[in-house]
Image (cartoon, rainbow, N blue to C red; front, side, top):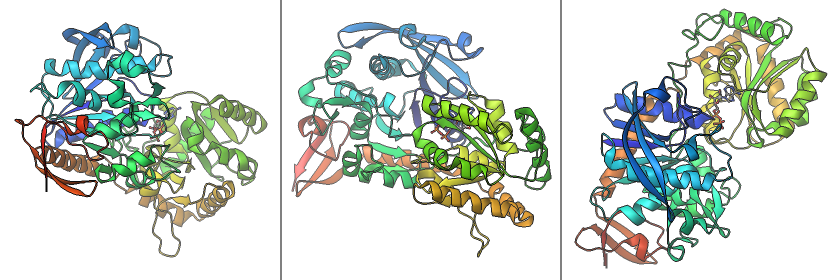
Length: 525
Ligand code: ADP
């Protein structure tokens, strides 16, 4: 089984969020299960750290079509911890100071999708499955079906598309279909393909044209089929619901391990929890907060965007601070929230520490030092921060949505079960009440210690989830080589794999919600 991850970030090469953690860790776990895995990424030549950047070996140079233009593409490789990482090089597109947010992102990732497919014959292995991640890679499956499936090299290649966050979709003007991809608008600019309110949607391409879709928790897989969470793609997701699966993310238990963490002041485990207080006091000292364990420290490490529930916190901040807590915030994001946090930090210098930056070491120190971790998200596909917090015995306060609902079992004082605190409605006073409740238990030391131990004993490593991906890959490979029975407008159809009859379902019947890769024979009964 050979899988190629197609993605736009992965630790330790480039990271903006949880996607990089997933693409960095999951291949390692799959390798342990005997899967041959490679990863292909853009070569962000100003961002990827040394020594990686200068030790890459060029395997091939190509010209890749971006519409009517031919663009240079280097295919480079580096082996890191037993995994082959391939990089698509073009400094005009990827030699910039950031990863995303440029005026020509549509063109940059159009190039990347085509370049990945062009590079495949020159890699060390021929993948059975292209496992694509998020909107930047959404066009890979469409291009594979459109332009490559008649080439025997690509014929039996399957595609899986993982949605890490449906909010970010990659929506561009209609003209790009022809200008950047050389695709026929009549064929693809329809509601059944990539049309999205008169524009082209890369995320939708991944959803429509991939053999299977996954997302990063079971609850989110259900939520995105509803109008509230569906980001206007719920209709197309409902149509493909038989092909959507939720698999929860894990975290790297090597990197996030409080007993072996060299970035924190006093390593500890669930048997030496008193040392957690040393981490709290050292952190308070570093951040200029009073050094005490009398009051709880509530932390938030997050992108500062609407998704993360900041407007709830803003609404009841004064009430939260009236509970005699310390609040530590680490993050960057929308200006509105950054400005507001800077202001309140001035108003409450003894209670709030606001750190508007990206800082890996400080993040570890906060996970280790805080008592409670705040994540009242409006929506949360999976969430990694709450998993890291649990691992460090820092109890999460979450809203019951997406992966937060699947991973944080609320504490129940009647049964003694649970290891976090949660609320259901997106309501500031429900959040406030939940914080008050959590603080009540903070003051009952034996109970508090018991809940913390329970949190630290959870297993949110990649172990189980990697096995689920493995099963899924097997299923996709089985399905792709198997005859299928489907229903088309009430007619029962048998679809058989037969290379002698060249009828592409996707091309001939674009309104079909069920898609079958490759060449097929249609037999009606
Ligand atoms: P998302 O992917 O939506 O941003 P996740 O909870 O899935 O949120 O993952 C966020 C990851 O990024 C976590 O590992 C968190 O610790 C880390 N992180 C977020 N902001 C910062 C920051 N300012 N400094 C250091 N790490 C951060």
